[in-house]
Image (cartoon, rainbow, N blue to C red):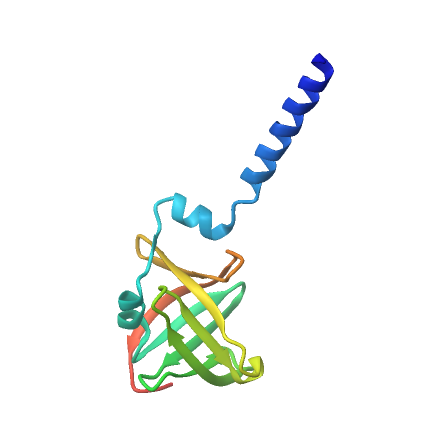
Length: 138
């Protein structure tokens, strides 16, 4: 019987460690003092602004037009595109570029100090937002 108790305790420990390691980058950002931006904060930050954002080693510029059209470009050339965006009542910004063929990718934005990062539905960090410049287009 003690072998069964030891096995059960070992299994519980493995499950606990597995659950702890399943924490996403979004969970980590929030538990480290970040705060999820509300839909009003997202609108104020994005709409009518050129947003400079980094993903990995690439830097992009996106313009969030008040008509819900988004245009973007890779800062060193090689890509430009357009699509649509929406800010949801559930505090996410959803984007569908032409290449997405109508599929929206919804992202959660978290501010930690002066840094704003976007996270995808699986909790993976996708973009770090570097700057916000009022504008009428790219």
